[in-house]
Image 1 (cartoon, rainbow, N blue to C red):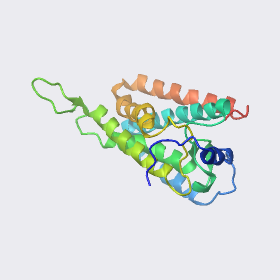
Image 2: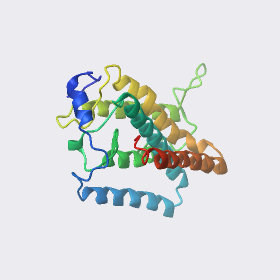
Image 3: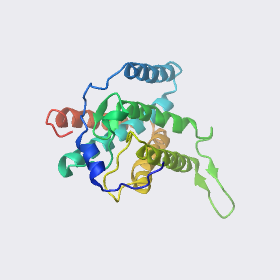
Image 4: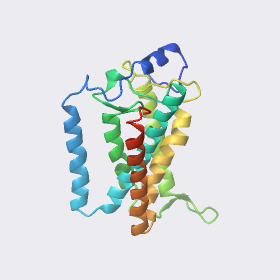
Length: 222
């Protein structure tokens, strides 16, 4: 049921070679429903002026897109990405490593992680006279990263190959350390910046994402 590492076999490579990016062959109405749910959640937070929650969501989602673009570039250069999704598991594949459903989940995951922090965002766990404790934002990021990495290992073991790991050295541990921890550190720490700087950082992040997509998609690289 759980897969912890890529097998490097021809089966996984064959699945990746069959992926059709941005094909509407499997498209259905769940696409619209998921989009409406995400839109409602963001708009609800805007109306309530929960701009810190929105910033957290945009931070993780922006970092997620940078990773997915990087993964797609790796696939273009070395033929196979670090991770991918199968045609059978989704209604629409955005880039070789991310489907619509997964991407929309990541648009909300930063919000969820941030809202799970204690009310006192400077709280430290296990503080004592001899130990200054563990920052709740770090602990929260590590906890969420572990949960997501384990769930990804489950997806990698599904019969419809919801997640595909090709390389033998890529799996739960590198995903946990190099991918998910940065995702959730981004959402937990973005609001530590002064307001003006925070929105400038997010504007630069999303500007970079937009620029890369505008250049690399028409060029046939991703």
